[in-house]
Amino acid sequence: MSLLVTGGRGLVGSAIEADLKPTHAELELMDLDAVETYLKANNVSKIIHCAAKVGGIKANMDQLGAFFYANTIINTNVLEGARRSGVEKVVSFMSTCVFPDDATYPLSPDQVHNGEPHPSNYAYAYAKRMLDVQSRAYRDQYGCNFVTVIPCNIYGPHDNYDLENSHVIPALIRKCETAIKDNTDFVIWGSGKPWREFMYSGDVAEVATWVLNNYDSPIPFIMSPDEEVQIATIAQSIATVMGFNGSIVYDNSYPDGQLKKPSDNSVLKTCMPNFEFTSIQDGLTKAIDWYKENKKDIRS
Ligand code: GFB
Figure 1 (cartoon, rainbow, N blue to C red):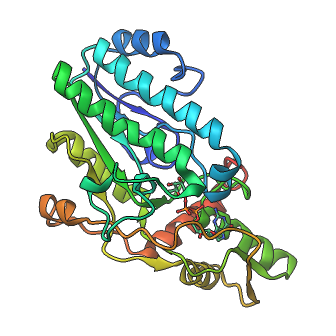
Figure 2 (figure 1 turned 135 degrees about the vertical axis):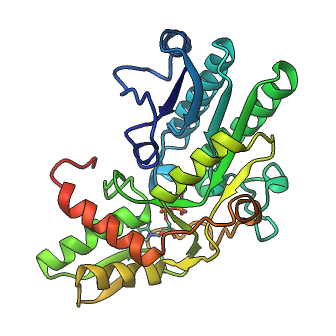
């Protein structure tokens, strides 16, 4: 009986301990037959499903169709393959971008399907929302113990550092390093005013493992820290940790995306009362150290 992590080489998956973390070459999630065959052959009993076609705000806007297609097919195949193979439990990752743009704060699980997601990532968000629909439908019809989690923005080792497609923290780490090396400005997309919740990947892995072992409800489980941080503050923190003393400038030709998306972490705090979040300062230091040690081999 094995635990499989899909996306096991990625930002979250690499932080989770599991028996099976197949590479893309070893398991093609776009192919349902391949998924079913793999799950049966490896006697998989539990899955943490992290694999997804993901990217930051620009990648989401540039590739709406590709993000919709890949994520819809991958998610449908993982859950259907799990059902066909008699997998006991699946924990699937959504994202706080699934919530409607016009929501009540803090974002809570009952609001997931209440309206259109933010236009910058509606295709990805709708594909991710279907994880909730499929998990609940399979629970209701087939009795599958399929649950979902909704994490806020995540960062840490093994992130994607591509300047066009990455999320803000890896992008700014790389840009800051370049600004130091070339003695240029440190350029931030947008106004720097949006607020985001950031969770360190190791923390996400710990909570996901707890959910796998303890949480059996159809209600999505939100993962987020107590505080939001403004993008300008993140940029300044990265500059401080990396020792950049030049100018931080804002390029308003790039989009801000959602102004904020604070989420309700009260269930996490009730279920895991002793859980301690890695502070953003410590998490950034770890992510920067990892980047410096691994930059020759990183995904970009
Ligand atoms: O990380 P990010 O792309 O995620 O952007 P989202 C967060 C904020 O950082 C936005 C700003 O306001 C960006 O404008 N930002 C500043 C930058 N400089 C940069 C930069 O160099 N690169 C990037 N990427 N951003 C994504 C969603 O949105 O978050 C996905 O599109 C997913 O669907 C993911 O949910 C977690 O929070 O804006």
